[in-house]
Structure formats: C-alpha cells, structure tokens
Image 1: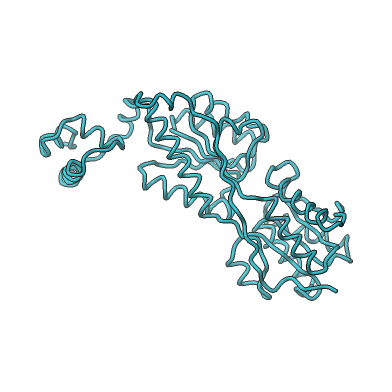
Image 2: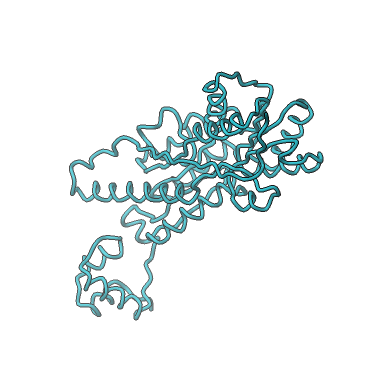
Length: 348
C-alpha cells in the first residue's frame, strides 16, 4: 500500500500542515525539511499530482508554445527553460505550432484546459489574441524573442536588442568598405525580423548612405529559405560584395548556396551570419557572426515565470496587499555580440 502524508507524520512527529506546506513548495524549518525528506525516501512516498491539482487548483506544470522545435535557437532556449523549471518542481508541456496561428491558438486553449500554472510563448500570432484564454484566467505569461504591441502591460517578455544586433553587423561591413550589401531576413510581418531590418537600415543612415530594398530578401528561418534567397541575391546582384544573414538555419542555407556557386569567401563575397559558434568555427574561413545569449534568454524566461508564480502564491495566501494585482508587465532586453571571424574582407 502506498505511503501517505499520515505515514510521514507518524514517522517524523510533525503536523500534517507542516508536511503539506513542504510538499507544496512552502518554507519549513531546516530540521523539519531534513526529517520530511528522510521519511519520504524511507517510505518511498510519491506525491499524487492529480489529486493535488484538484485540491490546490495548481498542476505544477508550465506550458511552452514555440513556432518550430526543429530550430537551433528555439531548441537551446527550451532546453534551458525545462531544466530550470524541473529543478523548481515544475513539469513542462511543449507545444510546437509549426508557425501556424490557428495551431498556436489551439495550443493555448489546450494548455488552459490542462490547468497549467503559466505559459511561456514565442508567439506567431501578431495581435496576441491567441493568449486571451490564458490572460482571462490570470495565468502568468512570458513571451520570448518577440513582444506583441498592446500586451506590454499584461505579459512579461525576454528579448534581445535586435536593432543593435543588425546595426552592428551592417556597420561592420560598411566600415570595411562595402556598399552593395544584401540581407536575408525573416518574414516581413514578424517583430524580430522587422527589428533586424530596421537596425540594418539605420547603419546606412548613420553613415550618410541609402540602403536599397532590392537587396532585401525575406525567408522563413529555415535552411531551405536561406539557400533559395542566397541564390536570388547572387542572380540579381552581380555587384553585391557582402551579405548579412539573420538566423542560424538561413545562414547554413546561404553558405550551401555560396559553396555550390563556387564563390570564394571572403575574396569574392563577405558574409556575416547569425548564432551558433560551432558553425562559425567549422566553416572555412571562420565565419563572422552575431551571437545571441541563448542560455541567458532561457534563464531569464524561467526566472520571470517562477517569480510570477511566487507572487501569485503570496496573493492567494493573502499575505501581501501589494500583490492584489499582477502589475505591469516587465521586459528584459539582452545584448548580442559581434564575433569576429575571417569572412569579411576590407574593400578600398
């Protein structure tokens, strides 16, 4: 017969209230914690999560909704988030919506029906309407990579300074004498892609130059789109001396297209890519790239969610009048870095 809380109480001499507080993540005295954990181990006690969720309305589960799991950027961040949440007693349900707004909306409703305690989302939907079921339930929501206009007071967010990242890359190329510079950027209606194109254009403006939209190609963050768009740029612009590719998968595709065309880096074409130090080191000559703090993005997102969950616990316990409302959303903006390689040649 499975051990119960009463068995732990008999073995430790502690009250059920103390044991329950510990099992639900509350603080107890150090000696009590040790006694409870010893009893749990000796009695092979396991928590009935389903029963606990019925009693407390908390599932100890966080939903994570992402546009594409088969993506290095996404996979790295999700791994960090899951590891941190698991160490803090939370399970994770990951939903891949295949960059489809309808599937994303269904994923939110599915997670709400599963009574998750919060949702972390790299959004595909542009207006945030997909999050309404979660926000109506007052669930904490943390966005990663992409903020949604109009939701800044209702959700938390972790993003990188995409404008500065792209501006830094373009400025480096301009400073090295390049003027005919192509860019392969994400979908035109995606916030992150818009920010990177804005930064790219700002670099030209700050140098008293005009950027040319004919040198802009929009991909979908896949290897194939990087490959196709690199082919387009090469066929349309024989005068192009440099290209900036704005995510890892598209960078990989672009390099494949460059190699197939027999173009020598950086003598015939200078390239700046995005993310993944391993790729930059494998490619010869070593690739110059913009690096994002992927692990820190995951760490910040998990920390924000845990903080909101803690605030909600205090609010429900009635211990802090200041916690009567969720409060304005918070946004953490992280810096990127230009990792210099050997793929950019100075032009006179």
